[in-house]
Image (cartoon, rainbow, N blue to C red):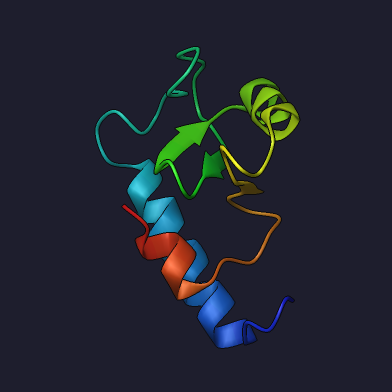
Length: 81
C-alpha cells in the first residue's frame, strides 16, 4: 500500500470520491468524457482512462497519474493544488 495505512487510504479515497461530485469534476479535464476515474495529482485534474494512458506516456516529469479507486493516495497527493 505504499506506506499509507488502511485508515488513511480509505479516508483519502472518500475525499477523492467527494471531489468527483463537485461541478466540473464529473467530466475528463482533457476530452470531456463522463465519469473520470483517474487523476493527475500534480496537475490537480480528473481524467478518463484513455487520457490517463496518454498522460502516462508523457512521463512522470510532467504528469503523475493514479487511479482514484485502485491506487492508494497519500495526504499530500490528495491535497495537491
